[in-house]
Amino acid sequence: MAEHVLDLSARFIDSGRVDSPPNRVTHELSEIADGVALVEAFSHVVVVSTDDGLVAFDSSGPASGGRVLDSLRQWNSEPFHTLVYTHGHIDHVGGSSAFAQDAESSGRPVPRVIGHENLSPRLRRYRATNGYNKVINARQFGGLPASTLSGANSNKPFVPEGTLEPVVDYRHTMTDEIGGIEFQLHHALGETDDHTWTWIPQHRMISAGDQFIWNFPNCGNPQKVQRYPLEWAASLREMASTDVELFVPAHGLPISGHERIISCLNTVASTLEQLVDDVVSAMNSGATLNDIVLTVGVAPEILELPYLRPLYDEPEFVIRNIWRLYGGWWDGKPSRLKPASDVALAVELVELAGGVSILAERAQALAEDGQLRMACHLIDMAADAAPNSVEVHEIRTRIYLTRRSAESSLMAKGIFESAANESREAAGQEFEPRKPKLSLEE
Ligand SMILES: [Zn+2]
Image (tube, rainbow, N blue to C red; front, top):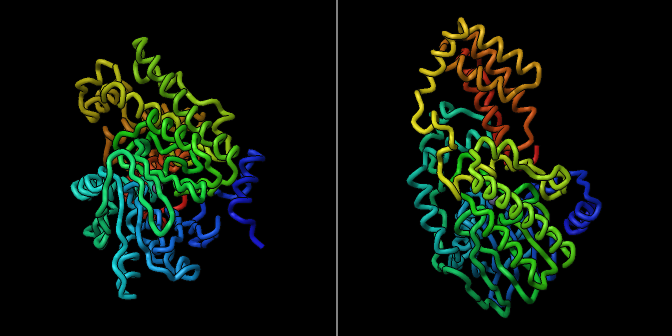
């Protein structure tokens, strides 16, 4: 028999070792308490049974909402009373049309949807930045350049049609009693500005959304809006101050046992607090962003913890996000306040070097020597100076593929792979767009 999801998480946390991916997209259901079920997907859906029907946290994504419901319906056929969105990311709200169809097909009312008051403005922003969101997701999850987005899928909206909007919102906290079960909703800043975590006293249970994801916190994402590390940490400390016995994040494994849960929550909180502290102290002493990226970091043993591995986001990106939050976009280097164009700078350097091949060959030598950061600067300049050179783009493809393999985070891997594919395209090579990766694991 497969190991129960709560035994699996206990084993990983207690041993400090992970022997299978904790982020699973199986669409399978596990009962994790009496009347509480979890379906692991991208993202998870957790359901609490009440005397007035089911309360679901999140609807999973556009591609998985239907499959999640199939699993849930084998467990319980009661109507959905309420759907709580933990936040407005599409992998959490995009499956909601399947919940609407489930209700309509059985002649029941569509579930009431609750979300924080910032959630609907988020969906409006996604609609206003529809193309941008599709471009960054193609890059992050599929390693694809923007050019691949034309064609059949180009008109598909980022927020799927039929996504249910919240009909109840709240600002700080909200307590709701449904069918004899009390739900205490708490707003938190963190991964987003619209997070809801919920304390359910009868089950001594927390639904945490993405404030905990069994990966280094998604607090630095290079292509996305501001994240809030200190408020994030504060929300984890507040969760840790409850009598929690069952902790259910929207990605990764649910965790049981008070001591185990609070040790995980406090460790993630301390890691975020330490990063903010170190970045802000360096800013206070006049350091530039580049100085800070080179000197601030997270201890390697922390990054080996089963729930803090940098496989999705990573500390270097979080440091930049903290700089942006407490400072501004300028990195402190005077020439980059109002810089020359990338192409003009590259042409000048190519001329100084004595030709684009010299720059490209040097980039290749640096890459072979493992100096990938430097190699990428030089090969980007070579490509800027000679955008039609097949030789340059072939070298650039190889360098960025090597760079991709040397990285741990999905975000860095995706961006570097998309650079490689951009050069494959420029060199006239075919490339097979791979299916976007939906799991957070490599
Ligand atoms: Zn998520």
